[in-house]
Image (cartoon, rainbow over all chains, first blue to last red; front, side, top):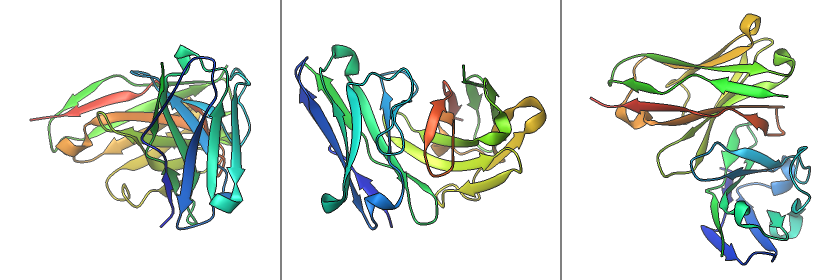
Length: 111
Length: 118
């Protein structure tokens, strides 16, 4: 059963760089694309990364996505942190039956 | 501009039926999948299922199969999520989102809060 595991929370200072991991288990992270969604408090999610590393139009290039096959994980990196980046971040991919799978979410605090 | 506009807040009693909607504008409705995501209060996102509006092909998460029904109406560019008998455990915010199969969601609706209480 394919699962995605994220750290519960991370924190970093404004202007710094933070990386959020998303580790796959029960299958290869490289078998299907990974997406990342940002959800600010009280708001709907928005897509910040799709197809592992692609940024939708309007998403700042401070956001980047990558895969590390050796650790079976995906990562979301946010550079030049701003207070507006404070949000919950979810990774998402698919299992072998094409059912979507979300990670548990990571709360990013910018302090 | 792609927009997904969902129907409003629903307050229902256990056992009642419900159908919520998601209207798409700004793209060709029949060319992208529409998915539904549940978020219980204070919890994470849960992938419920997806539908391809052109032929109504659907894929359900095993956790939701048999409990909800996805449908779409091409003539009004709208997708629907329905329950025949609500439970209090269905209390959540439900999001629709559009995208391509296997590549996740690109655009999201604003969410529909469903409150089921006796």
